[in-house]
Each structure stands twice: as structure tokens, then as C-alpha cells.
Image (tube, rainbow, N blue to C red):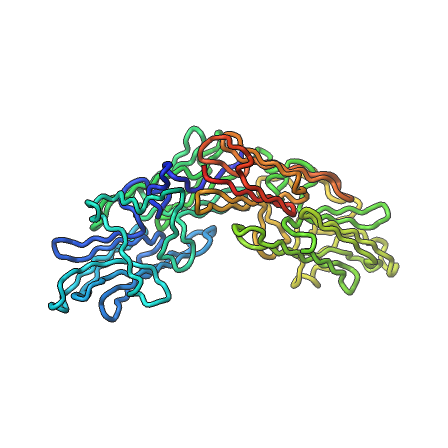
Amino acid sequence: MPVMNIGPVPQSHDGFYATNNPYQVNGPKGFTEFKLMEENEDLFARLDFPGVTKESVRILVEPLKKAVFVFGDAPKEFRHDSSHRKYGTVTGLVCDCCEISNIQCYVGDGVVRLVLSKKKINRHVPSSCSFGGATMPNVPFLAHIIHGYNPEVAGGHPLDPAFTGPGPVTLPHPSVLEGSTSAYESKHLPNGGLFLRIDMPGVPNDRFTVTVESDGGVNVIGRAPPAIHDSSGREYRAKVAVVPLDYDNRRIKIFFCLFVLFCVCLLWCGADGFYAINNPFLVSGPKGFTEFKMLENEDMFIRIDFPGVPQEGVKVRIDPTKKAVSITADAPKEHKHDSSPRNYGSATGLVCKCCEISGMTSHMLDGVLRLHLSKTHASSQSPSCIFFFSQTFELIFLSLFVVKDRCSAGPHKFPHGTDPHDPALTGPLLEPHPCVNLGSDMAYEWKMLPNGGLYVRVDMPGVPKDRFTVSVVNGRVSVTGDAPGVSHDSGGRRYSGEVAMLESHVSIPGRKIKTIAKNGVIRLIIPPI
């Protein structure tokens, strides 16, 4: 069983406790908190900027001294972060009688706290000071100052119903100018592991705990004590992943850095590793991204996996030297939740002086390109030309489209083809697709949806759309696919594996999961439970 990411799920049927952060379970809600200090009428503002450094926070006072602009940078602390983050917001007065006279700023644990002092400038205007906060729109800020969460409203109780979702929907961070606006980020790693980033603003380094329960659930708890004038502390709690029952917990690495939690788990793939390092779901049949074979008439057969590419999306050209063919292929962004389109590029051909390519046929089906190359003798300078295109010819095409993979590191003699049981193609580390020039180079992609559901993309090249099956048993979503042998393939292929884990270990009808099978790729849209 692989390590499963769960993602944010509601803590109750009423939705999340706090729509600003799916992991918060008590304390003040909202991305901001405002308070009017009764003793001196100073204004206190708490702004959640998870990941920011103290040195990166900048405060600018508006010329009329009615508002302050607050900016902060959260660097890309870990190589698996999707990007850095930049924050920007504005807060201040919305009255005509006063102006800001002094600013105190405190930064710690991913939270910016401000204390704004004010003085009277117009004694003829009745005093009715109030304040608010806003994002940084590209329009005059005064028209967009809004009131944030105020714990003194409704009797000072932090359980403001406006910040509890009526359903499983979380809000994006309104102050993010660049980077992720979500409190949760995950990434499937090339080694089969799982990377998670979880925002828990206000939690010090020593207040995080990570435990693995008896059922394999990985739980994260963070406690943020109150600071300065916070109305109270906050607590975060969640199950973020599921590991096999016999998983070695020491393999989980945790980095407390800028108060963002990173949890890396290794995919459970057995003592010998994955059956095929090119695809974690392949369980039988020929391995590798490509397969080569010399036919009895010395023609050459080549299979290359291009998952997601439609029939009209591939172009194969014979080089003017007639020694090689170049291949480009485009897999469009078929669904709005795909991270991006994908573009592939490769080349293959001869490295001899005695022959040249005389003919070619190509066939693109279910995300697999199959080439049939014929050749004729051009001279008799070399006794053999039965080699796969290698580094000699690669020098010509390197700047254009050549992408090396395990099968193109040659020379490889065609009579031997590729061995589907080659031990070099089995191992503990998954390999990225070597022909991908743009887009995801891994066979698996997933994304949490705003409604609490899950989007999954799984590459299973060679599988027709009617050969996919999806099932859910005890909360585990499994996909299988059968790819028949076509043309001169050495055999068919079978894919099978668990692709998602539901928070609730229930069995739901597979028909409730929307599936889109096309061009050797299956996409699942799993509704929230």
C-alpha cells in the first residue's frame, strides 16, 4: 500500500471550524484580527503571513496618515515548495477625526502584529474611530478598506459564524500577491514519497507534534499561544497522510522552518522496489518508457509512451540525412484541474554509414506511439547498422529535441530489443519521463478542490478508455487498467494501484466518482464525503 495524502477535510458536517485554515480547531478565526484598546484607544491588528521572515516585513504609511501598507516575503525555504510567497495588505482608520501617529510592529511565528496609535486632527468632527483591513487591489485603497474579524463583536466570542463554512469550502488567503493562497500544498516526489506544506501561523517551533496512529494515520498538532493583544491562542489539528501499518516511522522527516511544516514520507513499494520504475502502477508486462525491436526483415519497431497525446498531437519527421527521425508530441490540458499541458520530444535512428531510413509508418493510440522504420543500404563501409541511435548522432539533435533515457543510452542492438524483466528497470526510485519538455514528468498528479473533493490524474499508457476500472473499498480508491499488446509489442501491460485515501474509511459506489479516460490517462474527480 502506498503512502496516501488525505488533504484538508471538514471537522464536522457544518464544514470547517475556520474557513481561513482547514486545520484550525479552536481559537480566533479569520486571516486577521482587529481590536480597539479601551485603555488608550490604540488599534491592534493581527495579520497571518505564514512563512514570512522578520527582516522581510515592510510598513509604509499612507501620505494622509490614515492607513498603513504592510508587505512581507516568505522565501522558498524547501526545494519542493511550488514557489515563494509575497503578501500585501492595508489597514488603518476609516474616520475623519484622527490620523496615525505611531506604529509598533511585532513579527514572529508567521504572524505580523501591529499597534497603531492615533491622534485627533479635527475636533469639530464627532469621534467615531474604527479601522479595518484589505488586500492590495490595483485600485485606490480607501474604497476597499474592509472590516476584518473583531472578537469584540457579538460579545467578544471568537465563534463568529461568518468564519465557519456552511460546507467543505476554504477561503484563499486574500493578502497573497504571489504564490500559493492555500494553507496546504502537496507534491508527489520522484522517489515515490510525499511532500506536504501546512500553514499553522502562530505556532512556535517547539509546539508542533507529529504522531503515527495504529491505523497508519499521520497526525499533526500545532499550538499557537496568545501573544501581545491576541484575544486567545489557537490550536491546529489534522490527519494529513496514511502510511502502511508496518511503515517505519523514522522515515518521516520533519522540518520546522518559518513555522511551516514539511512532512516527507517514502512510498511503500516492497523490498525489491517498484516492478517498473517508469510507472508506479505498472504490475506486469514490458517495462520502460520505450521498447525497441528488430524484426525478421531487419525493419525497426519502436514503442514510446506519450500519455495524454491524441492521435493528431504527434509529429514524426525524417531528418534530411535520412539517419534519424525526430518526434514532437503535445498532450493538451484536458481538464481545468490539470497543472499544465505537456510537451514531449525525442529522436531515434541509425548510427551507421551503410544504411539510411527509406520508409516510416507511425501509429498513435491510447497515449502510445509506435514506429516502423524501413532502411536501405547506402554504402558498404560498415558491416552492421543494427544499433539504436546514440551519442554520435545525438550531438546533432541535442539542442533541438533529443532526450536521453535508459533505452537510448547506447548503443543497443536491435536483435535483443528490451527485456521486460530487466532488473535495471525495477527499483525503489521512480524515474521522471525523460521525453517531457514541458509539464509534469511523473505518472501521478493530484489536487485538493475548493469543495473538499480530490482531483487525481494517473498515466496508464496503452490502456483503452473502456479498459479502466475504478473501485472504492474501505476508503481506498483503486484504479486498474489493461493495455493489450498492439503491433509488435512484446506483450500487453497491466496497471493497478491505490490512488487516493478517503478520510472516512467507507465504501462508496464507484459511479459517484467522475472518471475521464482519454489517451492513456485516467482522471478522477472524487467528491467530498
